[in-house]
Image (cartoon, rainbow, N blue to C red; front, side, top):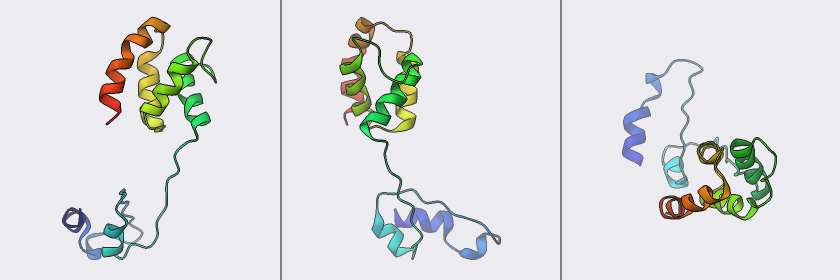
Length: 114
């Protein structure tokens, strides 16, 4: 929020030459209020790349093994194709068989689809 940004980085004199303040937000109005015009927009991985990232983390392979494709696609979607989430979830599922993945799905659907 605007007050938080003012509190954290309110005055340019607080920082030395060459200092950078990185603001992560979806709120473009917040950036406009602080006259921030140098914006880098982060792109999410494609569905294919997200599936590859999850597969590498879970299986050590570029794609899910036979029988895991549908589950892996759903897990990647539930993780929002976010790299950190894909890595964490993939690591936690690594070494599990298909039945164990299926047992985990209700928990993922409940906790990740929010």
